[in-house]
Length: 209
Image 1 (tube, rainbow, N blue to C red):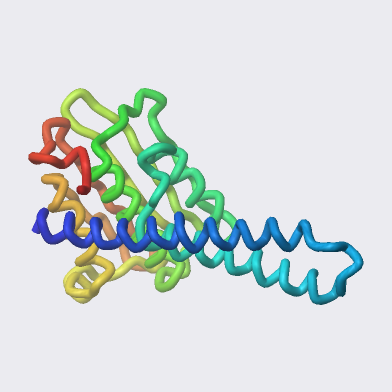
Image 2 (cartoon, rainbow, N blue to C red):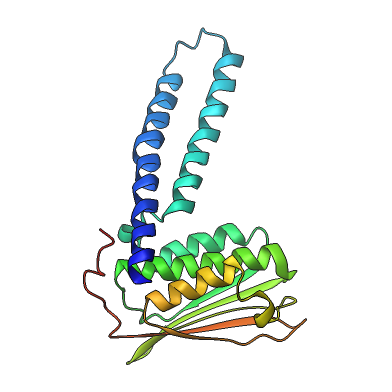
């Protein structure tokens, strides 16, 4: 299970970095060239090309980001989740509460946590008709607790546990040697509680290489 997920993340990372570094940089260079064109040229054409370039840059960044959180290693999990929350806040009321004592985890664990939060919120937006999402992250002496909940319609776990969304979340939880529990109340909301042991490190887990 762990090796499969690591292999998937490595392939995602390879493609995402290629899009982020190669295509994204080339588009930025072309955009700079356009800005330096002779202003006596056709302004309408220049404006249309510049608009298309901006859209392509945003698209390349979005695709790269969805494949693998390329900058997570340098930016850190908390700032990455804050960016996700800021983007989602335009569509749903979402709050994030992270303990100020949060300690950086291995890149493998942080990527899995980001993916779980991303998957949960995506499912909420698609299926739950929720108006509110809460994300809570706190370090304890022996483990880290992550609680994600919403006030939507919820779901019958036995009826949907084989769906890709739930399977993806639970596979990632298992890959971290973590435990979890769903607390769902139909028409009231869903809650996912994850406990990640402090000593959950696997061999070579500090890198996805």
